[in-house]
Every structure is written in structure tokens, then in C-alpha cells.
Image (cartoon, rainbow, N blue to C red; front, top):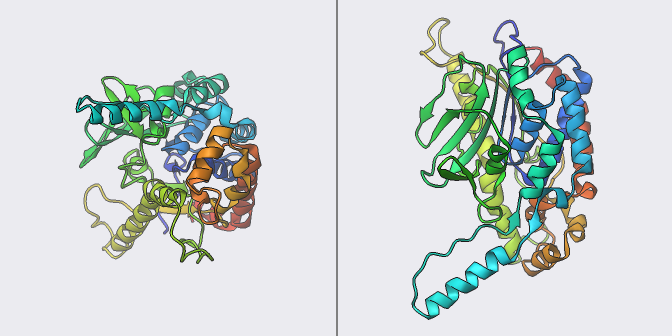
Amino acid sequence: MDTGPTDPTDLALVLSGGGARAAYQAGVVCAIAERAPELSVPILTGVFAGAINTISLAAHPGSFGESAKALRDEWSRLTIDHVYRVQVQGVWRPALRWLGRRLLRREHATVVRGLFDMSPLCKFLSAQRDLANIEAKIGRGDVRAVALSATCYGSGETITFVQGIDDLVMWERSQRKSVRQPLSWDHVLASSAIPLVFPAVQLGKAHYGDGSVRQAAPLAPAIHLGARRILAIGMRPVWGRRRFQRNAGEYPSAAQIIGTLFHAIFLDALDADAERLERVNRTLEGLPAGSLPDGLRPIDLLVLRPSQDLGAMARPHWNRLPPVMRSLVRSIGGQREGSADFLSYLLFDPAYTTPLMELGYDDTMANWETIERFLAGG
């Protein structure tokens, strides 16, 4: 869609969830920065692992190109030990206590705080970035807004935490709203905390978890923050649905079921929201010039997707997991063909993430003409 002359302040980068799959985003961003070294991206939004990439780009003191290279370098060093520690007792002990109380007819609440401890991720990220750089870049005019979304367990709402220029207008809609406040590492951990897998994170008086859980409109924060052009990086392959599998007739393993649930939570919303935005754009195109309803405007959207199945790429590397995790994965059938989607969310290992970055880089170069036209506003 031709929206007239390109405004360099209206471009947004939307980074969705996907756990270790988010290494693909690092490869895409690096390729874009290499081909467009003067590019500026003033609006950055992210959720789940996309929140990690978003904050890494926003908190780097240099240009978009320099921050993209730094992001790639961080992913090349990132291992499971830098992201989480396995704390199986965090789940099994409460479960056993609950069972004992049920048997003894003692009804007391049991709190399950997650299978993994995320404190290593906070330590790793804080050693790479100074969050004060976000406000400095806002002051220089390099960044308009940075937004991370999380789910409030108390209200069930999706809360988008925003740090940006003074004249940003906050919003409130059904089951989602924005809150202006300086971003912290706790915001990143909250946005990334898969329910039950990772502990909830307290922000103020409320506890929060993964922002993808109830985020039906992942493109909305960027639009509210003034984007007229949105570049989104999805995690679902270009062909959409998984190709027919040889084991499709077999009863699904627990890992395959969990992987399907993870897809529904973390991947499906972007596709659905992109379809809605395209329908709105087509409707607006059919209206006479100058008759657009208040608050509505065409939004250029380009969703970049991997050319390969990122889940299938994880399966050969399942034995790179820590021993306790390997036992867990084996017990739920995660090593079986068709069950690797579950693995792909937790396999923070260079054996898996490096090929993802390479794929993201190659896919971007292969589609550069389309991307270049989009960035130029054509």
C-alpha cells in the first residue's frame, strides 16, 4: 500500500515469542542492519523471548546496526546455563504436599513457583546492557517508544509497559491496556515467564507472566505508539501449517500436545492479527479519499517468516539438554519425530540457535527486494 512519503519515525519492529526460536530474529535483524546500515527503528515492541531481543536492541548505546551485531554476538554465547536452572523440586515438592493434604483432608493452598529458575537470564542480560541507554536514546531522538507486554495473573489483562517520549498516549481496551514506566529487567523476565514453567514475576503489587498468553492483538501496541509501518518477525514457517507427518496417525506424545498448546499461545496470535490488519487495510482502501473514520489509518505490514520448520530443526539436538531435562523430555516423548516443537522453546544451545540465526540471515537476504521496498515505503 502506498501511504505517501516515508516518515522515518513511523517504523516499528514487532518481535513475537518463541523461546529459543527467537535466535532466528537475531539473524533477520543482523541481515537487515547489514543491508540497510543507516536504518533507524524508533518503535520497538516485544513479548516472550521477543522481549529479550527488544530490550537488547533498545538498551544498546549505538546505532541499530551496532545493536544488531551485539544481539547476534549475545545469542552466539547464550547457553541454557545463562537462561535457566532446573529446579524440579519446585514442582514435585508442592505436588507431593498437595497429595498428602488431600489424603489427610487438609485443604491448604499449595503454590507451584515454576520448574525453572530464571535468575541466570537476568544476570546474563544485565551484564550485557545498561538500561539507562534506553532513556538516553529517547532523549537523542533515536527511539520513540519501547514496549514489553506481560499477563497480569490478578486481573487476567495483557499489560503493555511503555517507556518513550513524553507525548505518547496510553490506551485501554477490553482485556488489555498500557502503563507508562521505565523498563527494568523484571519487565523482561515477566514478559518471558511461561506459566508454570517459569515463576511469575512481581511488578508492584501484582504478579505477571508471559505476555503472549492473552495477547490477542500483538500488533496493537506498535499501532497505538504511532507506527504506520510494521515489520514483524514471526516464528511460523512460510507454508503456514506443518506438512503432513509420517506419524500423523499415531497417538500424540505429551510433548507433542504441549508443543501444540505452546503454538496456540505463542505463535497463532500474530497470524490472526496480521489477517485482521490486512482486512482493515482493504476496507480503508475502498473508502473515498478524505473520508477515513477518526483514529483509523492504513498500516503497512510485512511479516517475515522462516523458510524451514524451526521445531524440526531442534530434534537432532535434544541430547544437548541438561541430564534432568533429558530425562523429562524422554518421559514425555519429546525425542520422537513430531514432538520437537516443545524442545524448540527451551533449547538455548548454540548447536540449535546458531543454525537459526544463519537461517534468519539467509531468509532475509533471499527476500531483500521485498524488504527493501517495504522499508522505502513503496
